[in-house]
Image: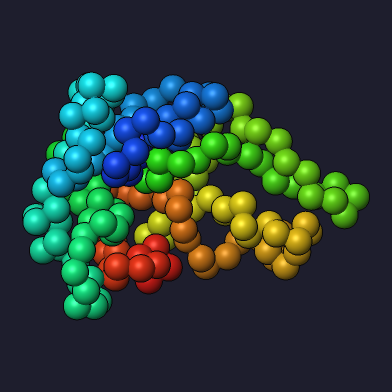
Length: 192
């Protein structure tokens, strides 16, 4: 039996964790956590707002897990959190998990009728998540992901007509026992 939760990655935006409200609006009823790093100046505000749903990781520890692929200074990028969530999932005893950024305002179905792209808000997100995990389990893929809005620019384009793509970005579905490494400061999701 799957035991899963949603991890919402956030930094410096305790007042703008839009994804949580969106999950609820779309019918998600499962466990969720806001993942923050120990260098976030808004950490106390996250804890005030989200209480025991805030999971904090040490960026120094996360930095040992992957290659930044450059020699620049600064650590204000999401790649630390993307790699560390596998440890958090294991610590929580999860078998599967979803990783989302903090700024999602909608989850929708996209479909074609009479050569037109139509969209409809998802109302039973729990069911959709279960189906995504089923696909992940049955295919042996390291991850599966939702398409993002930009993939649909242009209406019924190549993306919609061809179906599945090899690109995985933004909304990731993982198994705890299939650890992947995100690398690089920029485009860590594409690099993965």
